[in-house]
Amino acid sequence: MGLSSIQSALGVGIQSAKGVAAGTLHYLPVLNANVMGEQLAQTLPPEVGGAYFSRGSYKAALRSRGDVAFMPRSNTLGWLLAGLLNHETSTVDVGTGLYDHLFRVGDTAAHPHNWLTIRRYVNNVYGEQMLDSRVGSFRLEVAAANVVNASVQLLGGQFNEIAGADQASEDGSVFLTCNADVTEGGGDFIVDRFSMEIGAQLSDNEFRVGSYFLDDITLLQRQITIQADVRISSRSLFSKVYRNGAAAPSGAAVGDWDPVIYRSDVSLVLNTGDTVPESLTLVLPGVDFLTLPVQISGAELIRAQLSASVTLGADNFLAGTPDHASLQPVLATLRTARAAVYS
Figure 1 (tube, rainbow, N blue to C red):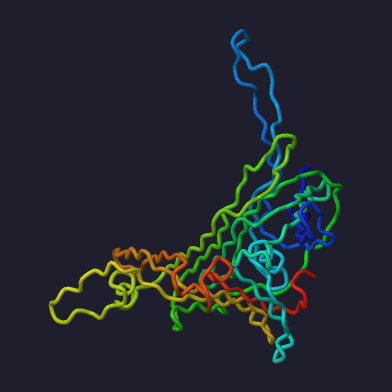
Figure 2: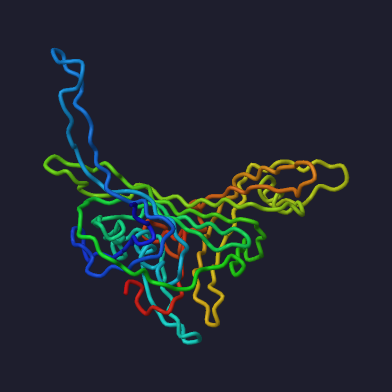
C-alpha cells in the first residue's frame, strides 16, 4: 500500500543565527513540497590497469534544494518574505486593527537576510530538516478568474533526518485574482495574466575542505522580472514600448522608433476580499518595458505579452547619497492580523 501526500507537511521557521535551528516552525498548506536533500554521489573515474567497470562510488557532499508551490495566504507569507527580503518594521494600522509589516530589498547589515529552517514530513513515516536555508526566488502568478498562485525556490546548507510526525498546517484566506489590482504609472493596467518573479542568485558551491556541507550561501545578484498577458485595444502600450510614449503620427506621417527605454512604476495589490481585508502590496519603482510581441491570428482577440525588468536607474534611489544601502528596487507591505511577522 502506498502513502498519500495529503498527510505530509512542510514547516518554515526563522533562525536566530546561522547554524541554529529555528525554535518555532509554522506549517504551510502547499500544493507541492519538492525541496529535499541533494546527495552529490558519483562513481570513481576509470583507471588504467582496472577492470571494465568502475572500482567504486563515493559521496562527495550534501546540500538541500528544491521548490515549493502554494496558494499564498497573508498569515503565512511573512516567513518566506523574511527569507528573501529584509523585514524592517511592523506597525499597527489604527483604522483596521491589522498590522503592516514592511519588507524592502536593501541588503544591509542593519537589516540582514534571515536564515530559515525547513522541515518536510513525508507522510508521518519520516522527516527531513534543512538548516541554514535561503530563498532563491519568489514567484507570483495572477491569472484572471482564479486564485493567486506562488512558488519559491530554496537552497539549504545542512540536511538530516528527523522522526516522522503529524503536523497540522495553518489556515487562512487565500487571495482571489478578482480582488487584485495592477497599476502602471499610477493608472490602471489591464492584464489577463500578471507574473512577477523576485530572484536572488545564490552561490550553491561554497563547499570547503573538511566538511560535507555548504560553508555559506552568498547573495550574488538580484533580478526582478515581469511577464504580463495583455489585450491590445489602443496604441498606448505599443507607443510606450517602441516609442517611449511618443504621440501618434498625424496623417500618413511615420512615427520613428525611439531608442530610449520606457520606464515606469508598477504596483501589485493582492486582497483577501474579507470584511476587514488582509493584503500584500508590492511596489516596483523603475520598471523597464523591454518587449511587446503582438499576435494577430484569425478570428481572435489581438493579444501581446509584455516583458519588463526592474533596473537600478536614478528613480530607484532614496533621497540622499546613492549607495548600496539606499537602493529601493522593491517595497512590500504585508497587512495581516499577526502582530509579529515571525510569530
